[in-house]
Length: 242
Image 1 (spheres, rainbow, N blue to C red):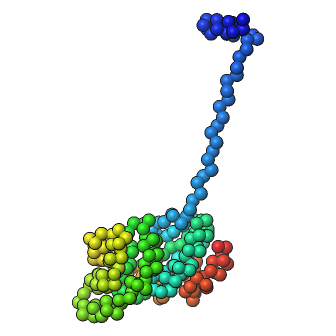
Image 2: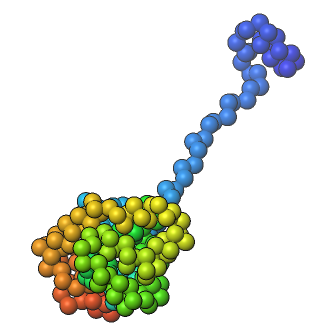
């Protein structure tokens, strides 16, 4: 009987009689909120106005800058000993940002690797830098012969000398094996604007922090005096909470 009344009421568009069996509409539940994805700050890389490349949280409480040379063995050692620890710890956690600024401590020898190293995308910058440091000894193995060749280039431009050294030392082939075209490599080595930018960065480093060797580190804008390796840098970073 109750079922018949329900059917009739629905057909006639009448309100249901009191006492008729009804089912309350199901309550809609709000979708569960997903937890925000955790950021791995090691993958957050950006160019800085000063010409460097920064890895990590731009708002990190500790900002570490390295003025480094791609042909400097002490810089290569820091890349091997210190940087992996920072990447796995405070950089990944967003507590520290790390910025690398090229400083041509060896003059013409550095020029080619810098021009090539800065001639890649933001995402490729640190992988190529790491690779240059990891292969530094083999790349510089022919330095004496390559340097001797440039002695006969008295009227050559800085770009021509950089191209000669980078080619003879194997840096051009090195970047080509990592995806850079030969035309791109030659264009970067021939860039006078690129050289001008390096000169401006060098002048700024010397004026602001009296940089005259590599690596030179700054922590939150203060130069770490007489600190050239991970063993001496680590306590300074610990003192500021990382």
